[in-house]
Length: 207
Image 1 (cartoon, rainbow, N blue to C red):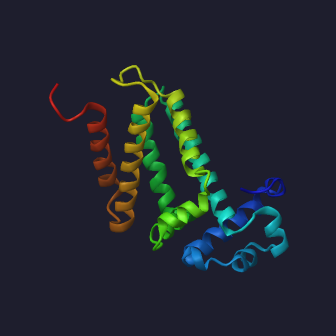
Image 2: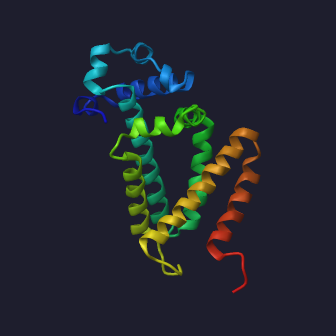
C-alpha cells in the first residue's frame, strides 16, 4: 500500500500516478507492465516512485483498495439516503457501475486482468498472503449490514446477509459484463437486473 509520503501528495499528483498505472495495466498483460512507462507518463522520477510504492503490485493493490473504498462509500450512502432500502440502492449501484464502465479506466484495467492467462495467481500476488481483497470485502459488507433495514428479511444474521450481497454483486458484474460485451441498451440491462432483484427479494416459489 502507498507510503505516507504518497498520501501527502496533492490530489492532482496522486491522480496522475494512478492514471498512468491504470493506462499501463490496460496496455499490456500485468507481467509486462513497465514501471518506466508509469513514471514517464506520470511525470515523476523512478526514485520518487519507490518512495511511494514497493513495486508495481503495490500500486495496483492501492488502486483496487481505493476503488473498493469508493464502492463502500457510494453503496452505504445510497442505502442511508433510501431509508435502509438495500434493493433501491442496488439499482443505483448498477447505474453507477454502468457509468463507471463507460468512462472509467479502472474497469478497463479489471477487464485486462480477468483476461490475463493466470488470473488466480496474479490476484494472489497482488493482494498478498494476508488476503487483503477478502478483508476489504468484509469492510464493505460490515458497512452495508449496519445501515440496511433488515426488518422484512427472513434471515438477519451476518453470514446470510453476506450471501445476499455477494449475489447482488454477482448480478451487477454480470450486467456490466453483458453491457460491455454486447453493448445492449441500458434500459434492457436495468430491466433484467430488476427482475433478478425481485427474485432475490421475493423468491420464485409459491409460499
